[in-house]
Image (tube, rainbow, N blue to C red; front, side, top):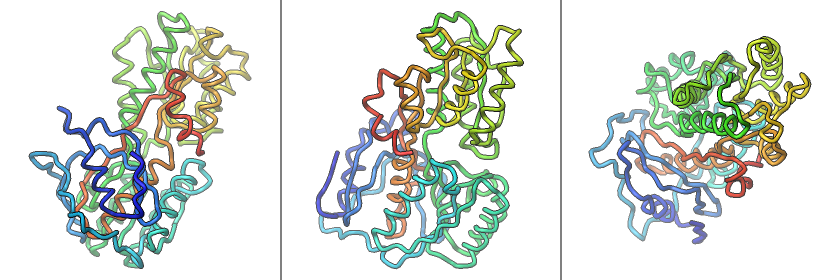
Length: 385
């Protein structure tokens, strides 16, 4: 859908009405990436709605799903564009030193400011102590909304409870909160992290099979262990890989979303397992981590890719470097979670909330597996960072 109807907020609701219903898992399915426009801003709307509840605008939300799982009713055709001009938002998020974060946050800011929302961006380069300071500053300013992308889910619990006590709503992004702070958020906007982990395992298995490996050692070099983002992905990766026990995960290490650390750990593991059958597949949780693994393998003189019957490498959220490596046969695949798509989704739900609409308590963007076979469908969105 590509709705360009001159800025009618009603088009957002039409996008939701076009969803194809609930699966047996209770998630909305069949939603493809689409664009809807209102007041001059185009937002990607790709929600899978789960745990539908309502917020009252004061920082509380209902975690229980409705019996039908249906979205809130659409407004009438006379509905006006959302009136959010002058609303204040504190964006407490990962810093621009990370290429994914740079695009993600810039997208959120652009979409919100285009609607007249006043945004302050408090960025931290995966520094949880600095993020806690920023969150305290945001709470003291008493904004209309805090958008929080966590560095460490557990460390944020006391600050989030302070925000709740102060009546300041939080939308939690790209993770889900620690259970001790679940009642302090009005909504979660997240990628389907488990799907991304499953896709990575499928890429590993399919790639190893294509390269002729009837068994293999697999390594995983992940993002931060301190967020549900990484933990949800690696849990799903392990569960999916276990379906083919001939391929074994022999090492799972926290690389903290750091390309240099990822490359260092990969080099160590290649040396460690050289006398134990070698490594047949490596999972770098972001494409730039997968690229660091590829470089480490090449420096070690290891063949890479199916055509070379070498190391199979996969990512699980896409960057231009990953797409280029897939084209070159050096990386078997990745997953979507493109930063601008995810950023548009955050802005979409934030604007609805700020305009007084009821929003679901959890909103997951639907993600897609990317390999050479599906590259044409996802190359454009996967080359923004």
